Image (cartoon, rainbow, N blue to C red; front, side, top):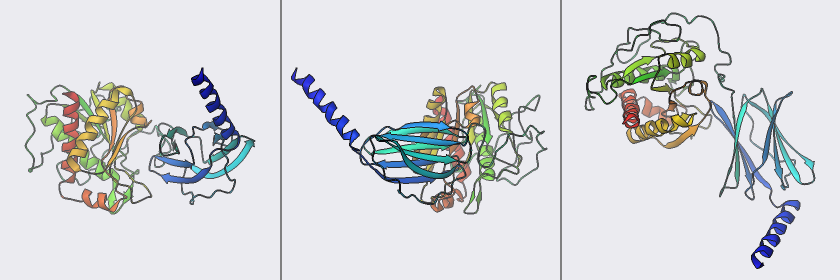
Length: 364
């Protein structure tokens, strides 16, 4: 009886606090990312707000029940292509509201972080749309043009779902400093079909920073990776082997059509906050999480960048593929330290070797 009475009193206290405005908004931070924006709402107590996406005009409405927010809170200048403005209001006596005005309709996720009194709202493009790729063209893919790479380019050319008989990529020499992988006949990946997707290409360069161009980095890493996987016994397909843009729909359809056992999309990260650095790996489906964990661990062990975590995201090529599929971001080219490391002589081979190690661990 005493326990029940205590719980009733405790609930009444919490209710009274909420009605009186028990917590306040202490700060707002906006973090612009290549693929998404994060909004961080810092409160004086732990809270789980209600978030609703509205259209015409597109906006996110974040309601904090029991909060007492000032309508004149300030945040840093908004440079996002997705977020136009923030504003506050009080739709009712017991609710404080933050409205996020959007440039267009988006996808979003919300997380309330216990212990930090922080609410994180992640705003990202809808599947298949990126800041550098706002449309999915149905035009024929242009013929591949040769680009300089550190090792010979496979002669198979562009491999997409438009090809009737795609050919596996040729082997790229392994780095001299490492032990050579096992032969194809007895390799750990014997019989596995793996699709490698070097992101961006052609008129879509991806991120550009510190003298680095993402589309070139993606291709160089992919060519090295194809060699290691072939040497370990895998049957390897690349979605491009030269500087061309490939339709994202065709990338996913191709991987599904060849019956791949794994799909790896290669990218390099960029963010306006140049202090951010490190390795991130993305997955979407639950079947892909173990692959993401294995490859992420392989990269951390090899290139030794900061651990930025394994994250779930609805990127088109890993959302529309039916096999375990991941998107890797080995480092941030917007960070000077990461960029200098990427310019080291054997970086692409080392990174490809580490991804290979993760794939071996996954299939083992």
